[in-house]
Length: 223
Image (tube, rainbow, N blue to C red):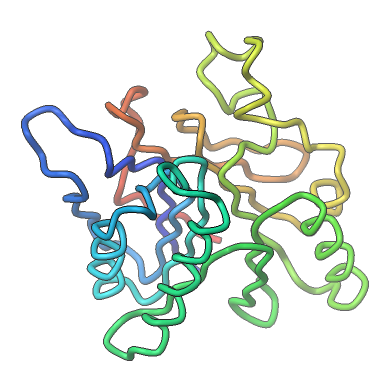
């Protein structure tokens, strides 16, 4: 399966050159798009209008809420808006499918499952899959980084706020299961693609100013 994985588009932030807010074109190189948080603010209608445009281009979109989506709102209200949006667009055949990953399992095929998003639920769900469906491989999508080394700008790696961006989950059941083949994330504004203890760790954030210079909106990931 081919998928484009992006995060931290920050469409709510002004850009150099006078680019309008929520005006950003993603080149379509795969049928499936994963947006891993900090895309925009759910308090702003323009976010949902922009998502509708993407659903006219992509067959499937997986969406993770980041820490910015609830700004100028509450977490509960923000998720309610996202759930209502999901219900509405999924009832309209002119759009692709929209999956809000909030303790959500989506089976891509008889042997591949995408999961998101919190740790307790991930551990329980991965354990259940291993027991009942041992043939399955798993991809996990989150906003928060699942391991510390290599997932953040080096100057912040040992900083006092690093735990707000990354947690060391390599000892958790879900990581150590042997069934999780890839864990993609956002939040840190640091592009990476490496393997740790058998799990591919991947991030492709745009950031505020494409700080790292490695972001690629059209990059295809094979899972």
